[in-house]
Every structure is written in structure tokens, then in C-alpha cells.
Picture 1 (cartoon, helix red, strand yellow):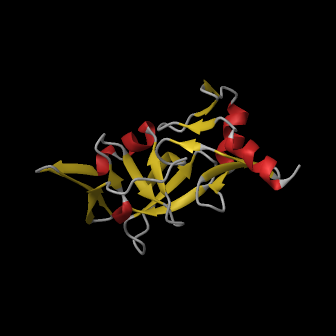
Picture 2 (cartoon, rainbow, N blue to C red):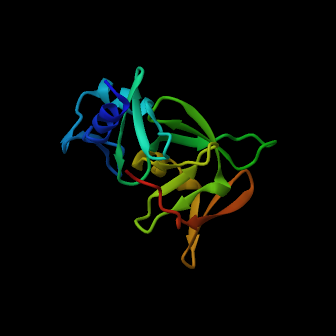
Length: 163
């Protein structure tokens, strides 16, 4: 198969990822848990910057509604030498350390964390709820209090690239 034909197949994969981290193929949900995990673990930026997923050596483009990475669980690291760090367990199975200063909230009140590679990850509802005791708000501003420090949570302004 030549590169042009392969690119056409990648473009017509029918794969999409919704705002909650659920995969669809041609509008139908991917129900099988292992398939969902394989697609999640394969997410990466294609050479042109669009989101794609890889299975083995092959990959295809994924239309992404919001972000391509999601936090399943999150908790304060609790390290006095590194205040403000959170340990995030991703839906892909990997662990990431995120900085509380890099949290952002969307207009819809969803929380996002900036990952070490610069991408944003959306916190699942349970992950967001697990931070409830550390979140405080007054006067329309939200902050997270960790390790004796207060960190304001910015309004999310950047829009992730999709497609």
C-alpha cells in the first residue's frame, strides 16, 4: 500500500474521543474495556500535530472533542520538599506528577491539569471530587490549598487542538 492510500485510511478511521474520555468509532461507542484501554494507551500527536492512536505499528487519526488525556485519580504528593505537587493516575495506566499551580478550570467547571509534556489532561469526576477538601472559593475565585500554600486556579483559556 502506498503512503497516499495509507493516509486516506488514517483520515477515514471514524475514531473520536468525547469530552469524558470515551472512544467512538463511526459514532458507535467502543464498549470493550480492553479496546478502550489500547486506544487510550496509543494516543499521541501525529507528525502534523493532530491527535492519533497507535496499535502496534499502525496508527490512525482521532477526532478529539476536548483533550486526549484524562486523570482517573489524583491526590496530593505530600512531600514537604516539593510543595504543591499532585500524583495523577491517568486512564492510560501511567502515573504523572502535576503541579497545583498548573491547574485550570473550564467554563463548565471541569478541572484540567498540565502534564509534564505540556499537554492538558481533564480530571474525571471522581478525581475532581477527591480534591474537594483542598479546593476553596470566594469572590468568584477558586484556589487549591496544599502543603500550607494557596494556589489560585486559573480560568482555562487555551483550547486544545482537535481533529
